[in-house]
Image (cartoon, rainbow, N blue to C red; front, side, top):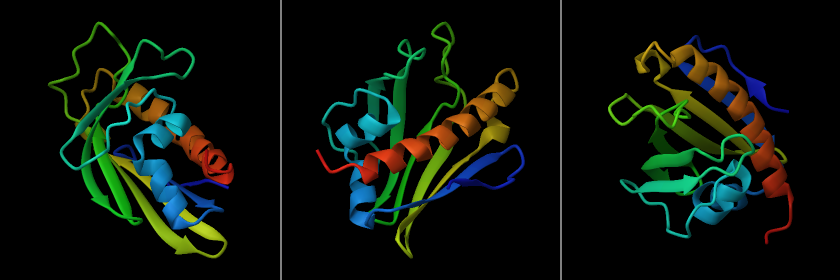
Length: 159
């Protein structure tokens, strides 16, 4: 069952026990095609790497007009994966490129019965006030859904 932590307005944190080995969870996070399957984006099969920016159309209903754009920060195999993005960047008429990004960090830990996955997105206090609260609320709900999506993904037999 996912848990949420009260982290104020600057960060969102979700933790979930995934009944899958760390290697399986790591692949789901860092293989672009698998990432796209659970996250809801048509990711090209270009490997993620620190410093690389990945772009893909979102496939989630109602967000098909949005392009996911993430810049990979760190990849520490089977332990930590992080990237930056512009949270709440859903208005096609707005240029978000000059706005501060938030940092999304996935941490994997061994746990009884599987892998403990923690997702932390931080940096919301730097997001422009015009859409900060909306981005925070949207991403808080989004991460609650996404941890359930990855839970379903890693429970399924590998494709």
